[in-house]
Image 1 (tube, helix red, strand yellow):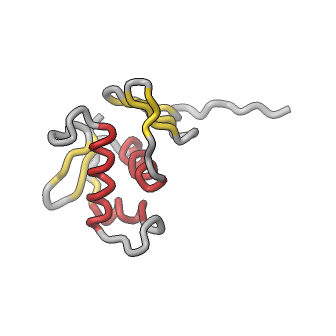
Image 2 (image 1 turned 180 degrees about the horizontal axis):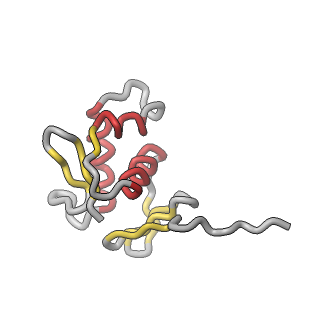
Length: 108
């Protein structure tokens, strides 16, 4: 008999959001939020690299394969969707911050 042992730090929280990296579940205020595979992959990468400036090219490599013709604007689109779903105020992001001339940074 094998038992599934929980993965350390498989659940990461910020603000009113909880992300289970193992189960691929995102909750906000206790309610499950639907995200695409590409959005989840991007979100997980942000969570695992807090406070680091991440270029659009680095982030693009994460979503490559999920889009027919990905470009750096694809990353912007996914970040906008994450902001709408997970930021307290998508118009004034606190967590998914744009770094002009660089890319983005996740601030827990």
